[in-house]
Length: 337
View 1 (tube, rainbow, N blue to C red):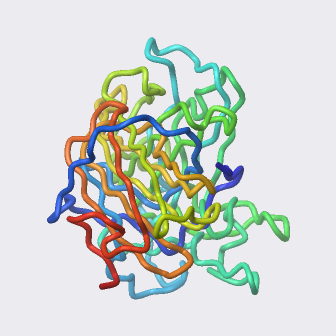
View 2: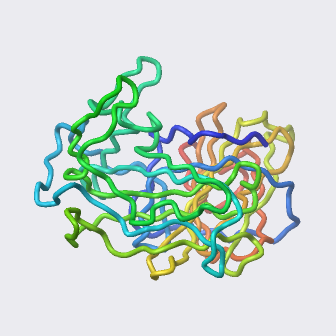
């Protein structure tokens, strides 16, 4: 299955707060499919153990300049998060990256300035030139194998960012305007199938020190694979009336799971994967727990959302026939009859 080496453009998708509700489905047990996936996602709310993927009420404003800021924050906001370790708290042996979503407005009515970008025209938010991945992340920090501690003093969102297009700097006041920050982990693409993609979200900054305003202490995150306790995987087959969908024609997005950082801060996992051109699909490694699976048929625009409870282990099986009502499954919420 083709994997993305850069973050997927995620403007259309945003997990809103709340528990997965209604029509819960249990994955059936079955055989393990061939692995392979593309990972990405939108914002997470880690204060809950179940994430839901939905279109929330849009924020009223449509540009960074329309949001006020908290000038008492000093230089900006920060998260006391260091990076990733193995289960023994030692440096990790893989490379990877951490993408950070910047949220203005509020958690309930979010505006993500770096996702407000039209690649066809090259236009977007007033400060889109400050985004490391326009159409996606505000920052995207890579690290080499053995160097999982990315942020020795924490992750910082200041009021001034470099202009990555024209050069110089931009006074964005993003630190003062920040409503929330979501950090998402991408492992080395060559080992993407093996590792849980962790994510967490903070939307409270109330501790002032050293000229910055900090969130709660997050600490470090231990990298996890399916060999670790507290993980899960979903596999299955996908067809279209008995035929095989084209490669990348069917998209699977999974949000959920429940884990904790070294400081006990709530974290979850995410996955985005596509049809391979064969019959099989897989979520790859995730944290165990309730999951929301969104299946999109990009050829027809049809979509179904399934809430799964208590998904644990690697032997969970979901099959789909995208030519049938409900994609061949009961318990889903679909945008078509």
